[in-house]
Length: 228
Image 1 (tube, rainbow, N blue to C red):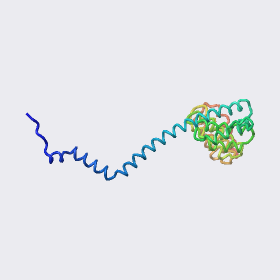
Image 2: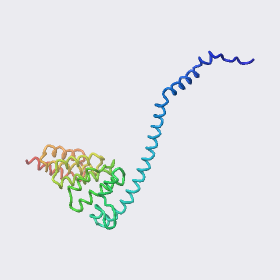
Image 3: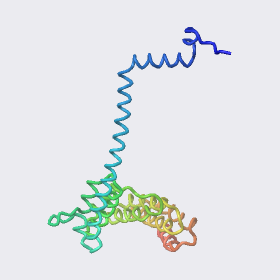
Image 4: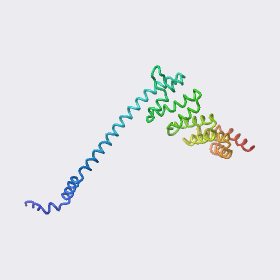
C-alpha cells in the first residue's frame, strides 16, 4: 500500500515544522541580537581560557622568584630575603607579594615577608604583611594565626592579640594547639584589662582540656584574677 502524501495544510500544521518555522522567523527578526549574544559568549569563554593561562604563567613566575628569595632567607640574610638585591636584580618577598598577590606563591611570599620583617625587628611591618595574608585552611593555618597574635602581643595590642589567639584556637580544634592558644588568649585579655574574658577563657582550658600542659598556668591566672 502506497503511503499517503501529506497535504500542504497538514504539513503546515505539523508541530515540528511549526516550531522550526517559528525558530527561523525569530532568528531572522532578532538576528543582530542573537549574533551579539553568541559573540559575547565566545569572548567570555576565550577570556576565561586566556585568564587561566595567564594565571598559570603568573604562578610559575612567582614560584621561580620565590625560590631565590627563600635561598636568602635560609642563609639568614633577612634583608635581601625581604627586599631583594638591587645589584643582582633579584626580587624579595615584599615585591613578590605585591606583584603576584593573586597567586599561591605570592601569598606564601606575604607570610615569608612578615617573618623576615619580624626577624629584622620590624614588628609593625610584619603585622602589616599579615593583614594581607590569606590563612590556609585546617592545621596549616594555626601556626600563622598564632604568630600573628604573638606580633600583636609584642606591639602591645593585647585586645586584638586575644582575639587572634582565639581565632587560632578555633581554626583547627585539637588537643595540642587549641588549649595553648586559649591560654594565650586568656593571658592577653588579662594584659588588656578584660578580666571577665580572661577568667572565662582560662576556665575553658581547665574544663575542656583537663589533661593539657596549660592547666597549671590557667589555674595560676585564675588565682591572680581572684586576688584582684
